[in-house]
Amino acid sequence: MNSSNSHTAALRILVSDATRQKHGERIQACVGARAAVLVSVDDVEQRGAEFDIAFVSRDVTGLSTKHELMPDTRRFYDAMRASQSLRWMHFHSAGADRPVYLELLARGVLLTSSAGTNAEVVAQTAVTGLLMLGRRFPELLAAQQRREWSPLIDRSPLPPDIQGQTATIVGWGGIGQAIGRILGAIGLHIQVVRSSAQATDNHPLPPVAYEDIHRILPRTDWLILACPLSDRTRQLIDAKALAQLPSGAHLINISRGDVVEEPALIDALTSGRLAGAFLDVFAHEPLAQDSPLWSLPNVIATPHSAGFAAGNAARVVQMFLDNLSRFSNGSPLVNVVRG
Image 1 (cartoon, rainbow, N blue to C red):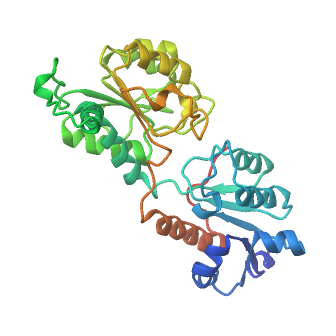
Image 2: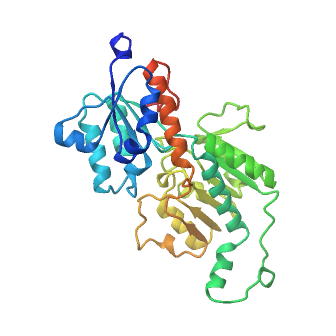
Image 3: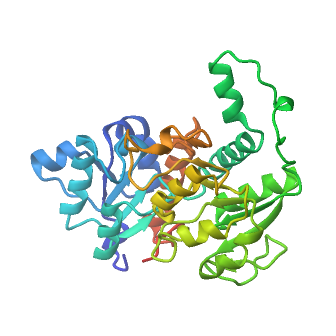
C-alpha cells in the first residue's frame, strides 16, 4: 500500500449478492476517487475473478456454525482460501476463532472484526439470563406449562436477593464492561478477570489475570464468561474451577463453548454442585439432540443467539464501510485481529 498505484488502483471486493445489491453505492462512495469492483462467489467460480478485500457479512454465514457449514457459506470460505490476492478481510462477528479466519490470519491476511457492534445486545442477554435464573423463572415457566399455580412463596428456600451478590466477569472488552455497568446498577459487586492484571480506568478494583482466576472463584455467586477464545482461555473453567465455586453459584456463558469443560459442567449441574447455568454457546454447535443440557431443569440453553438484534446488520456494515475508507486512503484500520 506504499506505492502510488496502491492508492489509485480499483479495489476488488468479495461480497454477498445481498450486500452488492443493498450497499453497492455506499461501498463505491467510501473509496473516493478509486473504483470499487464488487465480486460475487459466482464471479470467482465461473470466470476466475480476483479480489483484494472480502466482507463476510452476517448473511454469508447464515445458519452455519464454525463446526457445521451450509453449502453457500462453504463456497464463500473456499473462495477466500483459494485467493492469492486477498489482503484484508472484515467479518461480522466479534470472535475470530472460526477455522477459516485463523487460516487467513496465519497466511498474513489482515483481519478486522466487528467487535462492539453487538456488545450492548449481548450484555442485555447475559443479564436477562442472570435475572431469570436468580428469580427462578425456569421453575415458574415449567409450572406454567403444567398449568400449575405454584408461587415462590410456597417454596423453600426462597431465592436469595440478587442485590449484594458478587459477579465475576471473565473478559473485560465491550461486552464485559457493558455487563458490569448493568449489574453494578442492579447492586451486584463486580470482580474482573482479564488477559492482564494491570489496573484499568473503567473499574475501581484491580483485575485478576486468567491464570489467577482460582483466587476469586470461592467468592463468586455468578461466573460470567465474556472472553475471547484463545490458548489461555480454552477450558479455563474446568472441573477444578467449577469445584472452587461456592454452593449456590451460577454460570453464564456468552463467550465460546470451549472456554468451559462441558462434561465437567454437565456433571456439576446434574449433581447440584452448580445451582444453574445460562448457556448460549457450546463445545459443538448445533448442540446435539441427546445432550443433557437441553433438559436439565436448572439450565437455560439458547442457540448462540445472544447477539442477534434488528440493528446489528446496519452497525456491522457501517463498521466495514468506515474501515474501507481507511483502507482506501492508507489509514490504520480499527478492530484489527492480532495473531
